[in-house]
Length: 149
Ligand code: RB5
Image (cartoon, rainbow, N blue to C red; front, top):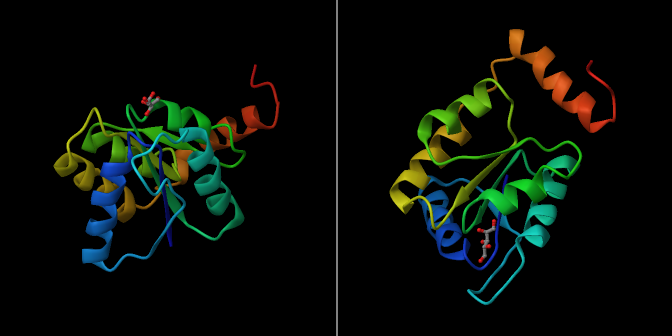
């Protein structure tokens, strides 16, 4: 199960992603927003990320205008590693190396074609583990207030 969320600026891209996931037969839960009316991105970010942390969803995909605000909000949720991407290499490698669990994109930055390529890469790439695990552990240690130095 994939959690999807957006603000008003990301709403049209979220709808494109839903149609894409429907075609692929990938199950998702849309936490909103549900119209193009003004809606603040932190609310959707928290709702979608809570589902990931709770284990209800394996991954989340979030859209706002730039992808930046919603990724900042997502990364405030404990247990979340969100990456704002506008290229395929990052969308793939943030899964491989960072074990990212949330992909964020800007509807005013990327077109739907590129966004859907990134979605496919993000959903179909497994975390590599190995030498990357110590670095991911360091990220999570910062979240717990531990000093790395
Ligand atoms: C909304 O106008 C816009 O600020 C928002 O979608 C996002 O780009 C913020 O980071």
